[in-house]
Image (cartoon, rainbow, N blue to C red; front, top):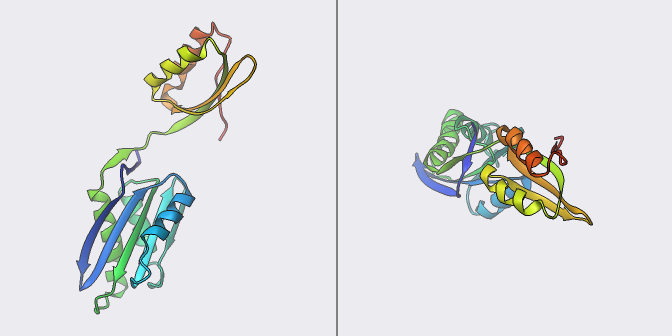
Length: 196
């Protein structure tokens, strides 16, 4: 199971007189990743290298370091720690001693790994989206029962007869919820699984 961070975290390491400051944070989309990178990056630093991963989507940047010696090792650290929905920025202040390509890969990848190992992680639960429509009289009962399923109400639109609902739920709980809603609505409401 993949994990993400509960809160942003930071560590500082010194490697052959260069200072490496690593920041990691949870994200849910690419915009958040870009905003975090812009916020954390220090224009006075020698390099601000970064990587982020959200599901199958990922990006990384060496910021002037030799190709694949910084961004790629940071991404590898994210994957190696079984993390997802995470952005990591490693800021380097050059200390006068060159590390070589192997040294850079170890420094950037190691700093990112150490930061993620020290972070407080939470397991990512795979959720699917479900849609259904129910009467006004049924909605308070269903809404109250959704708490048992740790469901997230993503959208609700009211019409003349009732409510159109979109929820995100742990996919393993779907059959139980479908039966519950069918029981409450006497079989009238059928929950649809939203196509990805």
